[in-house]
Amino acid sequence: MTTTATRTKKEVQIVARYQFKNDARKVAYRVHSSDGRKEYTCFLFDGKATSCECPARKPCYHMIQLEQREQERAEQEAKVNRVVESDITQHVEDDITVNAIRNGKIVQVYWNELTDGEREEAVHNICFNEYYY
Ligand SMILES: [Zn+2]
View 1: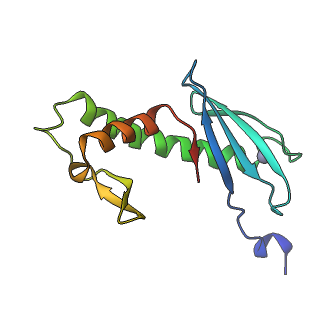
View 2 (view 1 turned 30 degrees about the vertical axis):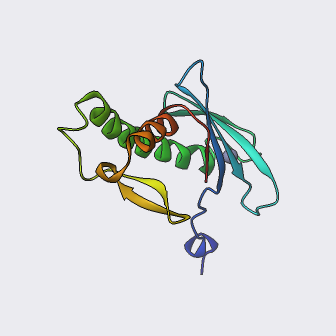
């Protein structure tokens, strides 16, 4: 029996994501250490992980998995941006869902079910703000 055969894959635990307002290509993630006791900051530039504070050999699993997350996020943003750039009232894409508050609960709501104010907020959140997981 080998130890490598029983090793389980570590999943990155994200605390928060920060996007720099002066340069949207710069992104920082706060992540938990694998034992959950510490937090590290991992930096990405233009979708590529550039550094991580953890002591593991680089690229560490944080860097590898965060690059994947950024890739998925970029695809989602591209979808939303396409909707925003086109005429929203005439070309609503039905497959986009965002978090919205309904009856005091956070639920997934389709883009065309949002109010104008919520759409504006959703776009703002997706494109510029800090995100918490
Ligand atoms: Zn790391």
